Length: 495
Length: 126
Image (cartoon, rainbow over all chains, first blue to last red; front, side):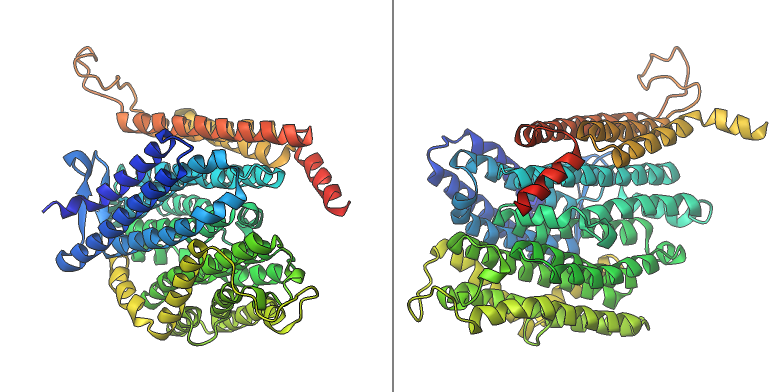
């Protein structure tokens, strides 16, 4: 009893915490920390319970205030949204624990409470976008998400941050507007805002308005493409992700970008349905952009000297993999893409957190200053190495499994050209990740005194990184843990 | 004649598309950050106009019971209600971007994106 309210409880507890944090006396940061950990633990517990309930009793829809779905707001809690909600909460829990220590180094003490208020509103809107079944509600959550994700960049109060977040904000707003225009066009055709209702209406009448639907999907996908940094629209990402405080970059790169991809799934396969999308030939175009992004993102990353900027460009390439799986519009492609969302989320957060630790400890961001750092920070660099190997696709790490699944999906869809692109992109990944690992462990630092230093990083920062690294390796050896869950989630989109 | 009639009937849509294009042009071509924000506002307004026009019913009255004087046609209130939310969002985004522009002006002494880029380039080389 009452378990159907759990997703709403998660959303409300996150929002309530965001409101309570600024009220607490700002000198007692300990109380804020306790509140943050408590809320996230509650949210994590409720997410696990929701997922269990969904597996036991099947997915359900939740009407807010018992208004029916034609006039009210509806949440859909199914295998997909419950699983992804759990993923978002669990990963952000680890990143937030890391941030409790690291943030002291990044921003002024007066702004700690402001930062966590923003982070909680960010989490609230991400979960809202994952659970919602209403197009306009999706738009509102999207706007909350874009404002908060810009503000956790500009909170660092440096010149570069203002510029990066203004550029992000302008492009984000143009993206949201184009999504809103697409929603208006869909509303014109169907007269509904609920996704299930639109699907029911549109599947009957889509032959009458093919142009209208094509234009609507074009606007929505362009908007989501700007926000998810699909290749030609990625210009904001490197600045935004590299100047942000480390916990923000980890959140932005590993989770926020993915949430827009969830919306793209929903629009393509829940609102329109596979028949219409394939009939209009939309997925083919998505795969073109994805393939260009996979190559170009890696090529741009090779030229970078700043470690966080390089990781940001690498995200552009990895988003290409996810969109390639989406563009195949087959069951295998979609599962590979969902699997890669999770494995990239884990690997990229491990990379950003370990890069942040290097910046925290050594105050160096330049890739050429990392000689011999593996001996000074052995645990951090081991985490970095595991995640970097995962990005390249060394067997035994989750990145390899997602590339394997994606390759099988590509062959299953009879498009072998993309297999070559996956291989080239993997080689390019190796070109920019391996030199860091080699110089960290095999080169001699100029001013190193002792042979082996003990890691002097705070425990609060080490533990989340190690947990993520262990998860990455575990998924690499036992991909079935995630794949069984993904295989249950895919049928909510494709039959 | 048919064509002109069609345009006259859909003048709202034509106007909103024109505004959208004007806004987009302003955002893309002007290097002054303030003008970019104005351009975004024009784009937002155009979409609000478009959305509200969808709900318009010719000769319909405001959807309040017993106010239409016996008329039975009401306009669709849903798009108007949604656009209220949209306006709130637009205002908050404008406020936030203006505050960022003030901060940038304090740091660089200019609001022109080209000059800011030039200053940043000099800072990196010097």
